[in-house]
Figure 1 (cartoon, one colour):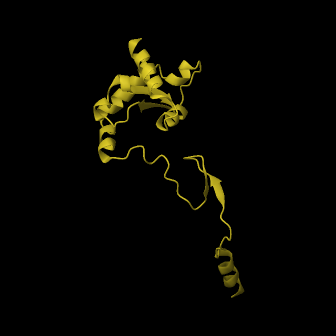
Figure 2 (cartoon, rainbow, N blue to C red; figure 1 turned 90 degrees about the horizontal axis):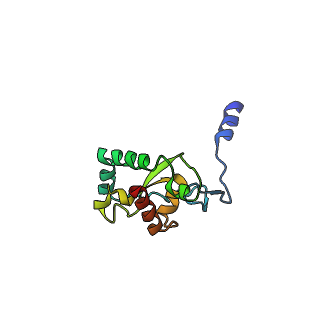
Figure 3 (cartoon, one colour; figure 1 turned 60 degrees about the vertical axis):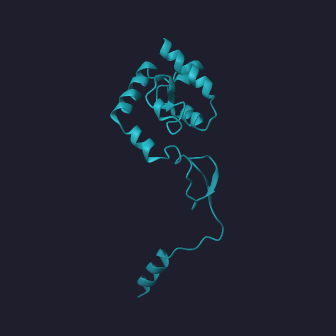
Length: 139
């Protein structure tokens, strides 16, 4: 009987009186550990946009853009760095804004994850990205 009571006491959760906080890996802010951050979930809002990106033509175009960029982040290369890990193809003008630019070489740019996040947040100038894409296509 004493063993059963001891086991029950061990498994009982003790309520927290003050909240615990952590740094969010999605947005970088500090949240309560029980808070679910939705940062980054708004990238592909519409089902139509998701559907367009799931096509084989997009997969092939993505591979082509990486190959044309010599499998390097184009922003890093312009800054004199060489980054070839975790490359992603970024739409400079969002697909939700203009679906006709989905497969346009001048609207696509190869970026590392860090620069892709910055570009999605608008921290990298759109005209700068367009000039890098144009430079790649004109080479």
